[in-house]
Amino acid sequence: MEQKTTLIVRGGGDLASGVIHRLYKCGYQVLVLECERPSAIRRKVSFGEAVYDGTSYVEEVTGRLITNIKECPKVWAAGEIPILIDEAGESVKSLKPAAVIDAILAKKNLGTTRDMASLTIALGPGFTAQKDVDYVVETQRGHNLGRVIEKGTAVPNTGIPGIIAGYGKERVIHSPAAGMIHNYSEIGDIVEKDQIIAMVDETPVYASLTGVLRGIIRDGFVVPEGMKIADIDPRKEQKKNCDTISDKARCIAGSVVEILLLEGVLP
Image (cartoon, rainbow, N blue to C red; front, top):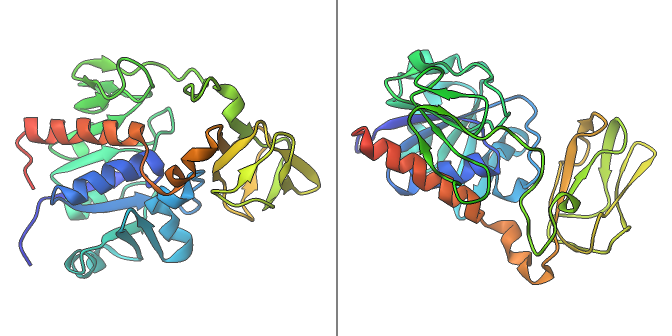
């Protein structure tokens, strides 16, 4: 197998997966590090879902769960992306990647440090470029989305979702109670405003508006009250978007590739 440059991406959610997919397509060798219980909403475009199902598929690229980094070469040779449960990033020391990309999007730093690799990149708020990591990429929708920050921080999290077809915060549904979620609707379903789309134990979860259920957290997940659990796109005609990487993820992915090329980290 041709030797390729190895990168580690921390996180396998939908925005992280846009980055992972782009890096894979550019010829980089990627290992994804996930937590034990990923909470992705847009599950159909999240490589981290392999933690539950053994495999995940994002736009015809396969992610495969492994239990040890020794399995990486076999998975890479098969043209797939290895996914390892390693929340603390312990495997970074063993693999010695050319770069570490923190794409957890936790709005805070969960342990990525600048000495993890020769090049470190973080997505979104919670990091300071030239202190926590080498570069930060802006993730807030708007004029500066995807901007490469060489010094300083990304815009702090506002908690307000981007506007789609005139809707912002209405698009996102948060859990009305603490408990286990039982889904009545599936990703890609057309739902009507006030329709019950799930139950959290005995508490109903209502659709906040009419549209396409773009994402909903995995059935059986135990959620705290107030946690984001679903996302509705008011544009019914955009149902196909449920299965594809978003414009936001693609924009951020391009910025990560820009940094890698700027620093001479070639595939």
